[in-house]
Image 1: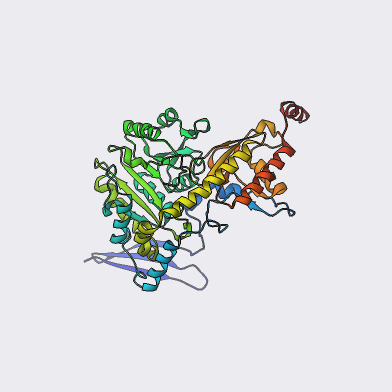
Image 2: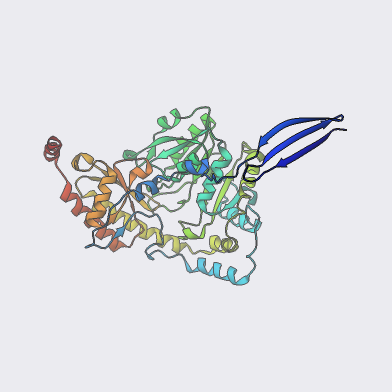
Length: 455
């Protein structure tokens, strides 16, 4: 029988050595001395963390600029409807959470995909003959952001690519790049109310394309796609056999003269993961309650995608159980007038902002139809002292204390985004300051040419 002897020799200050001997059939044989591992600190950030990049934060954090101390700061940059307190959620919503908290029945772990009763409530809320849903078609998530993350993670592998709108929400790129997924940007057309350039979209599809992201209503554009345009998008997806990740967090947040169509109601052939949540329509982004709705009437996803979503959801064991417990009441008992009043305020602010900015030489706002945003083109040739939209918005802060996000954050230079959830008086004051700023820096064709010559 073979035997093995491993001896550790250490003398004084010398590094311990492993002296390895083999004894085989009575014969001893030395394998020599092997230097042991010398412990040392070598902690490095993971490759995933190094690939994670948020362009909004990178651009905003690099804007080393102080607001004008003589003017109160007006921030039109943050897509959080709760900031100024003028858009509170409904009492029915808060009361639902209070009663669940007091009951003490929702303090433990829930299933990772959410309580069955809560998934049933979401399915019932969104179910319709054109796009039927059952509880098994619903995955509850920690906000719509996690819904998008799980949907991307289940559809795409490292080395594949996804199709993302430009301009578009920066999180898509942030998540994709961290996962080793390539991003291909398809163009939206401001002259067509931000419709998709369908020819450009289809030209980007290749054998490595994992999914198409469709954001409707849009952040940052405030646009809402018509039924006919959505059908054309679906035709591309069907032709190319590319599933859709639908970011519909602003679903139903459309103005009275417009109609919102959930994309899944318009197709029986294209498999769709629709992502939504409470954040925007119910004005509670901090409650972190989102969902994925699985629309797969041709069984193209099959069990593969459903099982994948289940496994991915088990990484953090689902969203807040307190909000889950209140979900059925929030969805089914929030009064219609709450939604109506919110949209009336947003529509009024949008109209005021659009009218005011349209009257300013050098700016070209694009009229929004929903969501909480408005995009404005800067005719840079009339502001030759600024290199780009980032410089323009930096100076707007330092001179007028008005903060709008440069659209470079959304891969769309020489525009800026305005958030329209602020109180009306702030919208009017901000637009007045923007007008003063533009009048100060605007150059007509001749003045711009002279300035260029001086350079």
